[in-house]
Image (cartoon, rainbow, N blue to C red; front, side, top):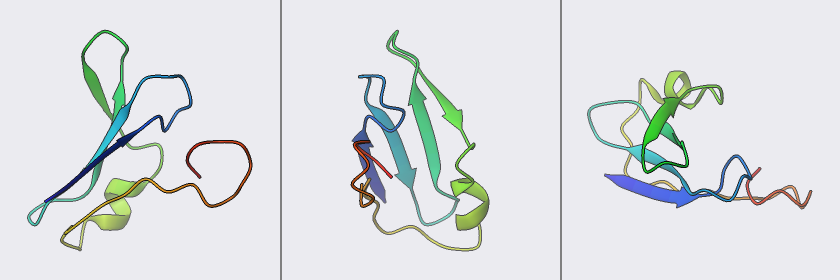
Length: 69
């Protein structure tokens, strides 16, 4: 139900985060060759498991020079 893309890992390639009503949120890392791998190093899947996702947005709020916090 929600999709956003941004350079989460700060390596130029656009990564994707996905939420939906029947599952946990998932972060997909761009492999740089046209494919994506699901990554859960952020813990987003475990945190969102009991909740439905209705929207999602990458957001950088720390002002540390990284595009995403």
